[in-house]
Amino acid sequence: MTLGSVVRHPDTGTAEFIVDLGLKDLTWQQDEDGQSTASLRLAAVCMTAQRGIAASKLERVTVQSPTEDALLRSKYITRVSLSLRLPPRTKDVRIVMQTVEGGRLGSVDVDRKTIDAAPASPTPEPTLISRPNPQDARGKP
Image (cartoon, rainbow, N blue to C red):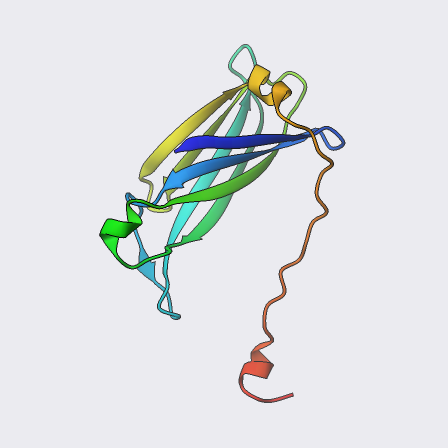
């Protein structure tokens, strides 16, 4: 697990952290569509100079495998994004990824100097993901 990039959102006091994660050590499950997916927990903590917690966030993330071949899968990396509120007293941020079963995959520490040097952009507008209506799948109105 490595840090891909950081983008600051000064208008909301947040930052978006992109982490790159190798796929070889994940536990894969076959879903009903025949795709392989892995469920992960992504946690981030803003730490103060005194090592106190200024803010934190925990998200569950599902990633899909681009291939069913385990040898090829080890060559792929997936990008996972996490937005986090950054209180002014944040000294650094630690991001931890683990499998839902509790196996730790890795962590990344990002210091305040790196965050402050990151490019800034307005906070993106939230978007809703539309899901197909189950009624449509059965051919009923």
